[in-house]
Image: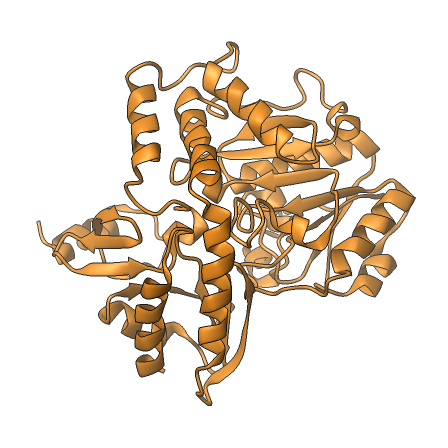
Amino acid sequence: MNTQELIKIEDDYFINTFTRQPVILDHGEGVKVTDIDGNEYIDMFAGIAVNALGHNHPKLVKAIQDQAKKLIHVSSIYYNEPALIYAKRLVDLTSFDRIFYANSGAEANEGAIKLAVKYTGKSEVISTVDSFHGRTIMTLAATGHEEYHEPFKAVMPQGFINVPYNDIEAIKEAITENTAAIIVEPIQGEGGVNVPDIEYLKEIEKICHEKDIVFIVDEVQTGFGRCGKLFAHELFDVKPDIMTMAKGIGGGVPMGAILATEKVAGAFVPGDHGTTFGGGPLVCAAANAILDAFEEENILDNVNEVGDYFISELKKLDKEVIADVRGKGLMVGLELTEPGAKYVDKLREKGFLINCTADKVLRFVPPLIITKEEIDQFVKALDETL
């Protein structure tokens, strides 16, 4: 079947929840992917910041193959070795004490909010405008996009307060005696790659400690080296009570996690939360391979070196349509003065996969292994396209 015949299957059979680009990807190698018609692309999107090691990375592929020959799934009633090993490794790399495995970012955020509410016994959660925390009913309420809320207001849970991002006074004004938690992305992704002032997260941390409010950082998109540190909140020198993650944690297999301090984690007891698939041996084997690559292949050094180079090259572009260049590491946004969708299409035709978010922001979240030479190829194409 050709591309159009296959796409028609979606038109005829899928529930319509996505607007896709007319490409059927077939295989990849490194930062490059190839569609079923043989067209090759440099992947500047990495599955929405998921494919941290790119495509067909030998460590990741081998770990998945080896584990699949042994066990793919065991229920949460039993222990499994990859999950135990990964838990210790990840906790030892952070300022947290306990881990819970989930399957996605939305599930991780949902669990984090439940944990904060259980710990405090309070009923309100503060989040920020233009944030994105998931599409379950509860994480949708935490997400700061009113247009996403509108169709589901009849069943939307109460107690979620959205305030402007990077506005500490707005947070102070929103706090009440019922505030259980503040959840914030260290850098907003879907909102347009918005980087806060250096003191913003520090001020949130201070307020939370003073008022015994749980400080949650959503690192679903910013985590696992994306912004130049293993986790982006490290850039701001803060120690949250809870951190959520997904996307890059498994390099392509569906996985998420919650990390929490001992004090807060102790609020959960057996029966309070659970999962069927979370922390299975296959995904944890993959996650261990991701950490192996970070330790053995200088991934973070590459993110910082190539990320700084990328941003500097983008800032050299002299185009009236460019309003701003911003980001950290390899999470970069190019804000335009007009809608960006047509540039996504034109760059795909030139052999580059990107995304437009917040209507006018071209978002670049390539695999963390991308080179300066590949950045040069992309910037040249972008320059010609703009």
